[in-house]
Amino acid sequence: MSEKELPSNDELRDDTNIDSQEVHVEENSVNTENQETTIDPVLKLEEEVKDLKDQNLRLYAEFENFRRRSAKERLELMESANKDTLAALLTILDDFDRALKNTEETEENILVLEGMKLIQHKLTDTLKNKGLIAMESSIGKAFNVEEMEAITQIPAPTPDMAGKVMDEVEKGYKIGEKVLRYSKVVVGKEA
Image 1 (spheres, rainbow, N blue to C red):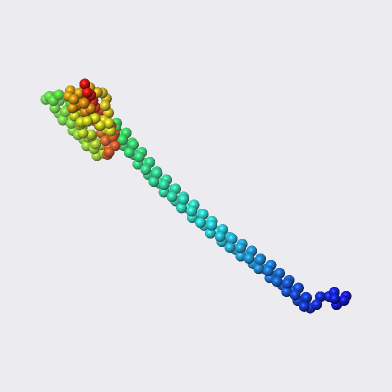
Image 2: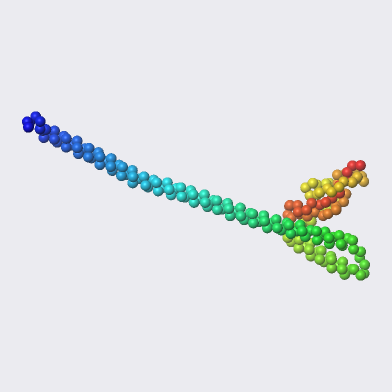
């Protein structure tokens, strides 16, 4: 071979430098990829932690809402059962009122009447302690649709009694501010 065909030492050094630079660049790209793969799992784990915290917060809020809703439903169920029981006892109270109004006071039944009054008083007190409130007598007052139920209308004896309660057939009761039973009344109308 001739000298022209063989590369010179300078050319060989330049080729070696180029090869070493390529190797250096390849090493740098491999290092960058390794850093990216190293950073990528960290980011992935941070994202996963963030998602799990969010999921945990949502589950906690959902559980708190469920707990409040359950407590409210339990309270409403107890109130409903209380209302039903008190409403059933109102008929007994009405029967006592009718019995006392229609029983004459004689020497023979004075003790029976006293016993009935004591029982009625005890029942009334017990119902009051449970939250039952008797509505005031509505006779002579203007008809109030929020507390009264008109069962019939009769001609008013005077013009100023038109639209007012003439008679109360059945007493009304409330539990707190809620009407348990509307007063059943007779309303006067213009003649």
